[in-house]
Image 1 (tube, rainbow, N blue to C red):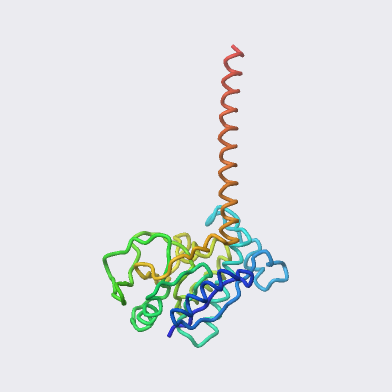
Image 2: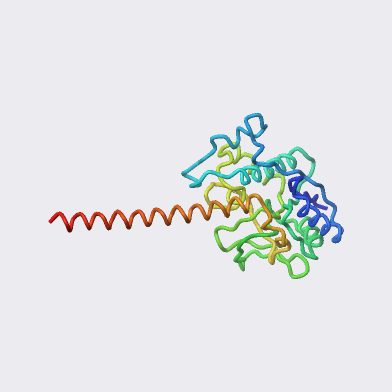
Length: 251
């Protein structure tokens, strides 16, 4: 059976407990894996070299917040753990994940499918499943390709050893230059990761999903960008008004 890791910070007591309770109810063995708090990544941190001066405006327009950096490094450590183990696969569940009733059966079916997959999304933002190359799993779940070019979320996924090595190689080349979900499934980086998805989702987001440092920091950034955009538009209107006013009254 594929080993399942619960990725969460120690202080996320309620979210961790909720996911662990769900896994116990489903009879799924799991291992807790402590996530990294991005605010604690200082110069003495072992992965500091991956986040320090890692901004790539040509690939991603903004600088990552502390939560996004911590999230990326947390997944990065799990990828390394897979490479350092004797396992072929790992299942990663972030603390906001809510596995469905068929979760265990789907994992078993995937481990026995024999398909050449490296990264399998169990939860995702959008999925337009392709009608080509589908593979039936269990309980009306299918292994599918995406017809759309981009989807995201790393709340729940399976990763094969070869896929983990590909991701580690990309980190070595590009560092932590964008959020981890964009890094894995976005189209900004050249990669050969063989990506699939379970359709429909076999993992949803829990009711506690929005109680997240990354989510809250992201919401603050969105509000800030909207405010900055509004100021810029108003400033432009004022400049245009005074330009026209000056031209009109200089005649």
